[in-house]
Image (cartoon, rainbow, N blue to C red):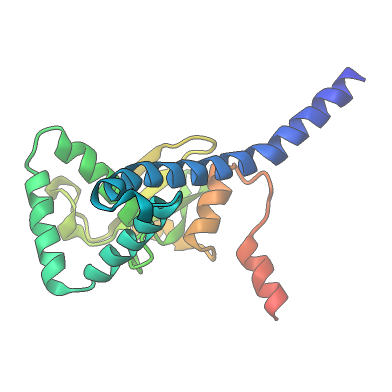
Length: 203
């Protein structure tokens, strides 16, 4: 009886927790945007023009405008100049570069950056993500035209290994990055490939 109750509780937690965490993240983003932008708007505008939620709307508009401005060559050059300054500041350069590289990894503009591969390692096959194929962009000691830099994620935690793998031990994997990352981080427990299911439905 107690075993059945425990199993039911665990099933409920597994079902509810991802939903709760997703809602909480969205709530945190909305509240944070409202607090920051709302305070600025209340300072700049008469109180009569302000209403709850205006800060969140202003935050979304601001992010959209920044995205539009980044399409201009001049703005991108100014942004790159500002980044170069950050890259020379102690401590800040390490934190900023790490965060920047992480977001660049998931950027949809990177066509070959982060492509999913299967790595043959000691007769085992591991899911990995190619992070760098150009030897000239690697440290001098790592430059090898016959190898690629591959990130191997670890299951159930944020972490992994970055390895220089011979090209002969790497082959393409028919999964997009999102599906492969989800599969790897959950240790493949669900055994589902959403892309494959979607393709079958569309046929």
